[in-house]
Image 1 (tube, rainbow, N blue to C red):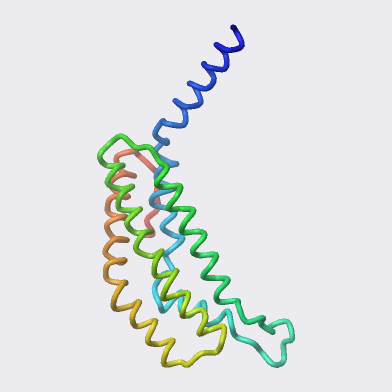
Image 2 (cartoon, rainbow, N blue to C red):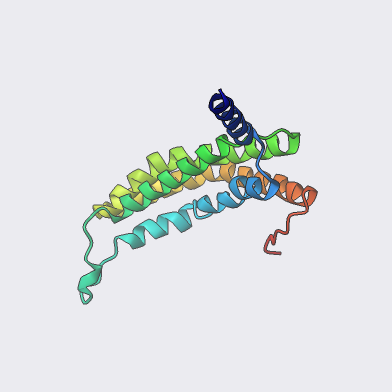
Length: 177
């Protein structure tokens, strides 16, 4: 009987601990600092990085490519964003400021994820297969025109809410100013 009571007590303790809201530092790290994972989302940054993944140099044998380097980079980015999104969704928050910040951070990751899965995946394939510069440019322009305004706006909203949250909870954050 004592063993059963102990098991019930431990299970209830673990459940209570798992349901508690994270401390402000951990919460801030997951919902604000993790946005750095997609800070290179813009076509002039991520697109350029994917293009550079496929560059070979005739006089450097170790630069020989296998033909899937850009796609691997996109796959890693997708996995990273999905993990961050899962972690943020799992956070239990109770105050309105944290809820708003969590929702805005989720919105940001949900906006970039389909672009990585669709446009950037197509762009990576073009890079890996040495596709036409025109088609690559079309994809990058589509990302810039169709997605960047909303993503930039959501990034800004996350940072505005994040600054207020950091100030409210006396978090020592350097915003690069």
